Length: 161
Image (cartoon, rainbow, N blue to C red; front, side, top):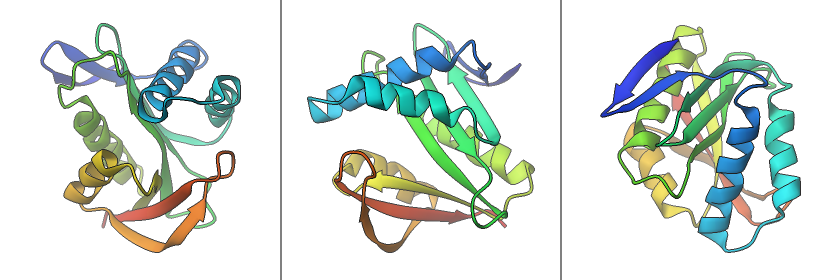
């Protein structure tokens, strides 16, 4: 199902299990490009296991511009969704795909009846933080260590109502 376009790229609903492995590859590639090193097997498995949770929106962009977003429900607050993953393959030219996927995720979450969306982002990931804050996300709480890597993560929330 096509839901949006950006130039020649189409944002569509992802399929499970069909698109899951490509998403794990995109995530690992993005982490390698950002951090220079990553436990690829552990991170890929973490992405795969996220698709076992209650999904609000799973959106993908197919080649040649690979990207995906995954929004989950089932938070302690049932009115809040979690933007668990938003990633653009680092080999993809930056064409606003992250911004388009974020807008798509927000719209589907709002239409799903959620009152807010939260996410966590590494405190030194300035590009992502700029994207989220320009969209209206605001930080809340204190940074907490990432459960696998230990680096500080800051939570952000966007009110949808």
